[in-house]
Length: 180
Image (cartoon, rainbow, N blue to C red; front, top):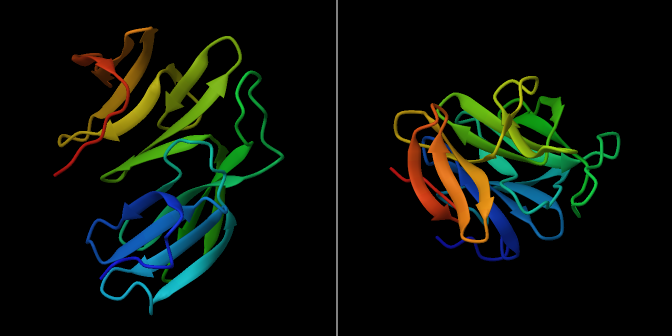
């Protein structure tokens, strides 16, 4: 069944690991959770304003828990980028419990792992698994072995893609995804 009308203007969609649920972030800043078997009948708008910073901003951490990068003016602003100050929110869709996480601009989720993206003055894009120890690069995806794939800024020919062990995966990369 198509996601007609509930996610028409979405820029980011994630599916749960079991494939039964989905979540979309719309250009109007709304996060919408839905059931895949009947999305138009079984959906709910979450009370979170999605940041819309141009990075991955919605993800499933488990079959019931979603991570959303939401607007938060208490977070620091990175000078030189037109991005909204944002923070990670996690919501359990079954119990409706919500918790606040670190200030971030984007996220990438894998099997029981999450990588945070932020920017630091003088360093540019940095990522972390614990929001304390930051390394240069943009997290792109987790591969089939659970290794994070990271884009490292390059020159005008594009970025270099490496895994978290530093192994070269590809050069001249603009964007990376991983599929089953």
